[in-house]
Amino acid sequence: MQKDTLNFTIQKPDASHLNNLAKLHLKVWQQSYVGIVSADYLDNLRVEYYLQLWKSFFQKKKHDQGTFVALQKNEIIGFVRYGSPREDLEGGEIYALYIDKTFQGQGLGKALFLKACSELKCLGYNACYLWVLKANESGRGFYTRMAGKLGGTRVIEIGSQTLEELKFTYKL
Image (cartoon, rainbow, N blue to C red):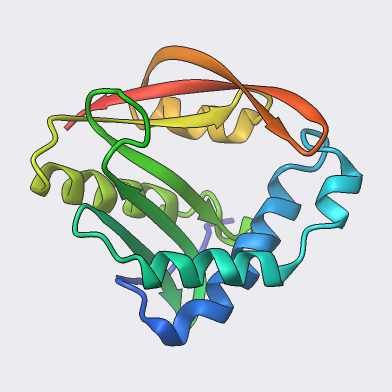
């Protein structure tokens, strides 16, 4: 049986998207990190936290950072955030790429990823990198399919857990 083609548009979000961005951010964390991040931590996440996070992104707009959302029938079904590196590393950084699980595997993640890479190139970067939880097999598989090269590891804290992340690098 053939999958229907997913129709979506990609655009920069505006203030009217804040609530839906926060809801999607929470939803995708709770979908994607089951079995990776503790259930207690995921159960205690609140949309208010993500709403404040997104409000801060909009209030502190920087010329070297950006966000794109994917919309289907005016509903946000994915987003990507990118910009200057947060660490002393060469290349731009893709901070986050999240797709509602219902819409994964239909080209949406690839479209957002490529859009972020294109924008980073316009900002003058010749390469970019991102971090993904080592235990996130789905994410690792996606970034490998996007021709990422493994480029290091780091340890982060999420709640009371210590988790390992892998760095993927890309030439732009």
